[in-house]
Amino acid sequence: MLSVGEILKKQRERLKIDLKEVEKSIKVRQRFLTAVEKSNWQVFSSKVYISGVIKNYSLFLNLDPNSTLAIFRRDYERQEAVKFKRRLSVNYFAPETKRIFKTILILIFILFIGYFGFQLNLYFSPPKITILSPKTEVILKNDRVKILAKTEKDAAVTVLGERIYQNSDGLFEFEFPLKIGKNEIIIEVVGANGKKAVFKKKFFRED
Image (cartoon, rainbow, N blue to C red; front, side):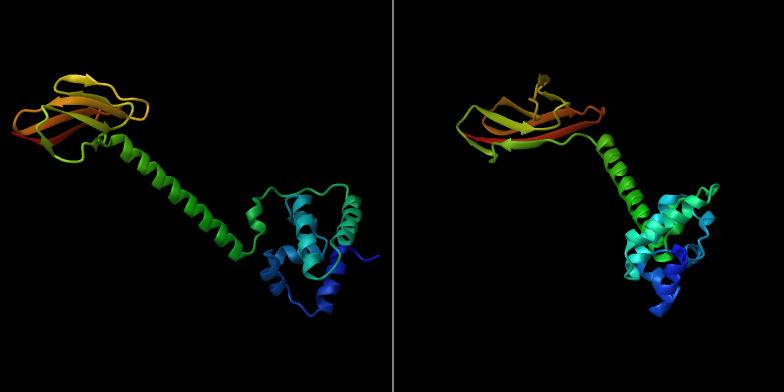
């Protein structure tokens, strides 16, 4: 009775397909395809890898993978002491597959470095302050203006020497007294990283 390797080789030769074409199609190196055809299981790291190669090889040759795998299991079980080499599974890939694998690893590394750098930049940067209202700098005849602003929720906000507390979204508000003419408000914010930001904005009160 023919072995699974002999069946695969016979079908490949009948279809006039060389091993290089098989390698390119199923992404398995020629030396492992040759090992399968010769039933040389010692070059593989485990039975799982052999089964995967046989299945893909069978499908490529239009053979029933269930039948070829059944023959493989029969042949394999007859060998009582097959010792496998411990190898990384990527060694079974064709060169182009290995290049794709390496490219993916490099991209993951670059993304990790980029994310790490972004987090470091956030950590060492002073907190940002955004004035949400009022939008205008000209206040008509009002002796005070209500300021609504936003910053980091863990930052410490100080206005005119007074500590202002923001909510869980980082929003805070306060009323700022205005004199006639030009008024400058100074907001000091110290982030959780200890970095300090000073924000200045001018308002003009008309007489």
